[in-house]
Image 1 (cartoon, rainbow, N blue to C red):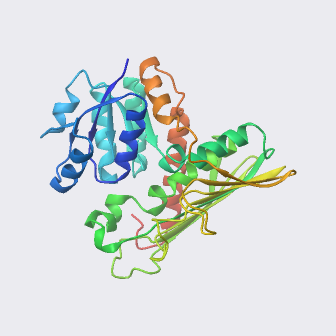
Image 2 (image 1 turned 120 degrees about the vertical axis):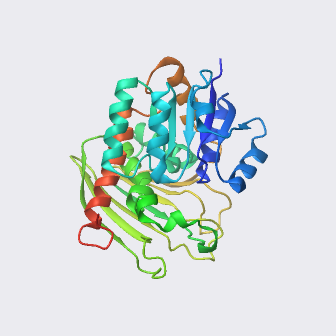
Length: 338
């Protein structure tokens, strides 16, 4: 039996990956709410089966809808998620799931009170074939015990295509809480731990003085009891790169390492989802483009069975807790400090 789901807030393009993850698993998209006509028209063109509703309450009060998806402006996501859970809906939010500790605390409280599922779709893991394959290899012992990860998340800024909220710190939440939450989640996943802390973090605006609210580069050092990690995220992807960013992840183990070139192999191999495995047997390139993405299927099963197979609540919360901690630490003594 399939589930019905709807979207409230479609401001980031990640909403398409969120929707598709559930459609692939047999979910039924039945409705959406968006106040922006241009975004709504594009969404409706791709998903004509979904009715555009004037008010979010139409979705929230529909007892047949099991899950609400949101990719609203980051500063609005927590409120949408809270309303959905209070109306008996499970939630899949785009990252960041929230932009403040107060919002994180309230989401935890309401989720525990309502016993709904609150899931953050960290798309650079759950919607990226190479990352899923890397997880399979690490779990099989292909590189031994993981001791370090390096996650790089460069993005293309495309100034003329970005709305005002993108440059407003109070609306997008900061570069570490936003983009770097992807890499934080992957550090936890590949380290197989929730016992981790932020060692250091920085944010800067190095190349966009006309947009003082923008943080265009940031980094984080993380550590757990047996693993260390480094993260760098930025908005400096050059125009000559034929995609939005050269996302990379290196996972170092005691018996080998894996490097992912998620969206492009700049050495010339076509396509996306390139994985390089180096171990005692040698070096190999693995094309991961056909690897199954299980997140949507698992999440639908969780909705039906009230389980946590797609991602545990503790893991979901810890990734955002660390990203928010890094954001707060990086902003101390800067113009962004609140």
